[in-house]
Amino acid sequence: MRLSQDQVNAIRHTAQAVLGDSARVIVFGSMAQDDRRGGDIDLFFETDQSLENRAKVLCKLSGSLTLALGDRKIDVILKDANTPPARIFDIARRTGVPL
Image 1 (tube, one colour):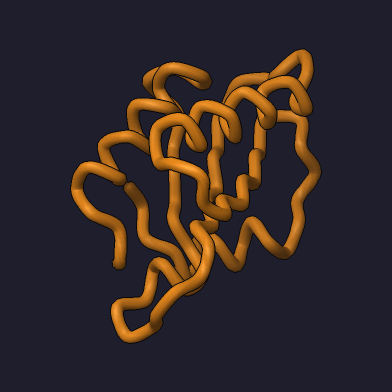
Image 2: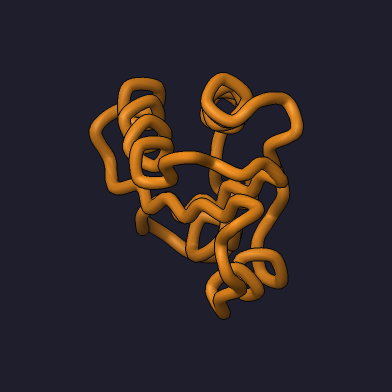
């Protein structure tokens, strides 16, 4: 994984602050692979909660991550208890690195 410990800590802190202590985060894509270079940060956030407004939570996650990690490309995927299954969730779980 090509994230520094400071970046990992910032991502974990953001997940807990926005989604609570039970939130799970996986980094996937090129940042999960040590032999790759460049690329954006692809993050999969998962919670067992039912979120009233997923769009609002996604915006809050994205904004908080930008403040914590700086102005760089960050892709955020969010799955709550009501989100239907999607292939991207399976890909993130299978190929990613839990934080």
